[in-house]
Length: 445
Image (cartoon, rainbow, N blue to C red):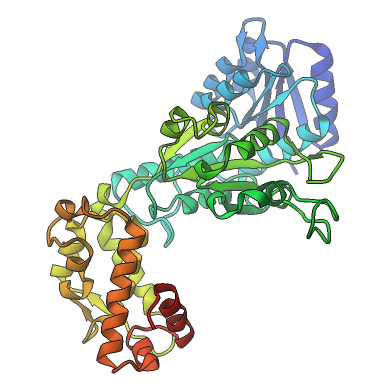
């Protein structure tokens, strides 16, 4: 069996020897170069599975080599070795396309983890993510998004995923994880806005038994749970400032300390984050730390809203309706042409999530296995049969507006069934337990 091969580029003989010995013990063949010129010569002669390069070289920089490899050998992951404390240099390397970085003096444990992750990338060689039921769309924005996901999956750079609510930011984060070298390790999503501020440190870093009232046993934090994999920080803009400081330190030091603990635990975690807010505006307003913003926003990936890819609505609708019809006793339904036209002209402030909810409601209420324009209840949503833009400005809060729509539909079903809750639940396609929960949530007696 052919052994995998690594190219080591460093002008310091001691560093080259250390890397050669370490990689040799990992059953890798190595080739060494003292400068950019020798590295290019090796790359022209032999195939490589990985490249480790110092930033400062006698005839150029590691960035020069990163750009050369990206152009000529794009399947070869490149890791940068930088001086201790040169965080800006490391970030520039990641932005340029480096897979990851190490700092001097080289931590051998960290080196072995990096090499193992980089070599797993060699098994992913497709030019584009396959179109599946999770990331549908043949529009130019979606094709571009899939290519960006594949490119980012081959890096360890932190990614800031921006986009409106309901556009699919967590799905994009999952795909970056699944297509990368950490795919066999945990993907841990966390909604930063859903954790009470007094519990945040314990949730993120864990705690020791007896460290505070109620800490009856040791607890693992989110960083420890994601060790070796990916931690996805959703709605990261909702983190309070004190927690932002602690998060920044953990990301920079690659280590966490549990509440009540005395020792730091080294963690190997890739950070992906998202928010529907304008993070740069949050920084300008003083609600988000600028240093954390630059650490998280090494690369920004924008998820397009549904209104920018209206040509995908037909495919999305078809797949969603098939999914709704799965299960015993359920029958497929079709969307008539007028209803599809209405959907394509609607603005969708809630994006794909809103489309899903709209079709679920229409599937429940339609007759003769056909969804018509009236079944979509678009007049209830926006008061317009065209784009919805005219009345969109009247909606102050989307969640409250959707609750009002839900309340109207439930009230209508109750009145039509003479307040028989079981019959109303059946009419709406809900279980009795779900109906009871919604009645309580909406305050309907």
